[in-house]
Length: 478
Image (cartoon, rainbow, N blue to C red; front, side, top):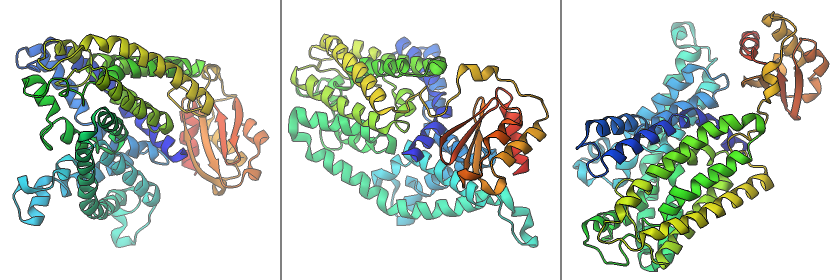
């Protein structure tokens, strides 16, 4: 769980870019909801600007996770994550696989056409950071000395990524194909089938495998073509649209209400930070149905809460199927597509989305709030050991950062007792091997504002706004 939360924190940097893209999509799609920019240069400009970020989410994740998971957040790790991403996605692209097999590109298993997904981006980031942490201090023989240390990390990353690609070459199509087969098998289950699909659609987003199910239900892989038939009027009234409708109450009402619960449960000192992320994400979800800014903000920090979100999405799909309500989308289940659904030939009772959505908003808010508080989940603004507002006013006894770092290191038991260390807005965070060797009085004698011991192996030293300078000197000493 701690490892997942560390990944979640690493994703905060790239996730912070996504709400802006969601808002731009909303503006562009609102101006030209049918042409997507073909009828308006302003719309085209907004949509293209947004797609520059949204379409590259996997690359942003590869870089963000790689830097965030690195021991010292060095830029070399970012390069390694990018190298891993490029290696895996190039080696397993449809064109490359067609070359390996000696066949045409359109004969390659569909799985390889979906290899550029968020899961591969996160995997590449983990590979890049792991290789960096392990090999950043490697010393090679003199004739290879140029490639010693950080310069060898990208090379090692490339080798590891090749090996990972070989494994994925065999298992990725099997997993993807199994999901397609499963999706096809639940087609005849009616409302329950739509609920199972919607739940799995959300649950598989972290792995990038939701595309497999979408191909079955939204498009013509298994003869359903829910999306195409809904807008063309070629489906069956009362059935067509059942695999899209359930997302509207969640994206327009449920998730924004969940975001409100996360804001209300955030620490007072972190509410402004949480609000900036959650408000923008909620607007993107409500207007355009782009949920990644919200979902990725808590799926790794609180995976149990994300599972609850997936289950509620399935329940929404069942309810909407039974009422019946039928809405569809061209882009995603946001306000713009909901309004357009009123004129669609296969639409049924689209106005009922409002009362259904309000019920799910209440469920999301109270259930999210209760679960977050009950299990002390680390949603945005509730992360372990985050600074308090008063710490921003903390003042060091002096500005001799080198001397402060020396005393702090000695108080931590020396560099041999220091496993890893990092810093946030106001604190130096350290993991130690032997907690008995930590001398809090010695650390405080350096002139720092305080020392916190969250666990036996964790030490947090409250420095204040000048924490980076102490960290830099500590890094030099170690």
